[in-house]
Length: 183
Image (cartoon, rainbow, N blue to C red):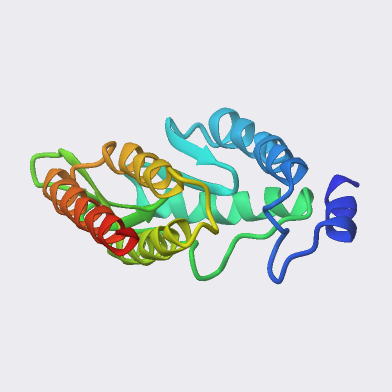
């Protein structure tokens, strides 16, 4: 019922248009039955989900392959499907992308978390565009700074100290260029 109403009122090219607050609320709450299924029925302790992105960690790859099938069935019951290009089971040594970070496990078992390179490139372009729009008076003063501070807070969660230093320098140069163009 909820999924049908969303499809009728908030269509997107694939899935739903995420611009609506109701779509975001539903995106958090509707899959909560999946959370219960994974934790209570499949008994997977290493589980996390944000909206429709989820991650399971388990020592048995065959068990995870079975979980993927079972989770697919549960998603179908609520009118959702697993994304075939993003849904996969990988051994712990391989890099896994989740919520904009690339996760790697070292031989010692330490988990490293790096900002995905494509996200950095995309964000640099966004900052340049915001700085131009702000300099032209088409965006409020401080828009670029606010966007950068938000991205930086997200990136700080990872193991990306050198990247943060490079991005701080990039941002400072961008702001100097914007000030010079206004003079």
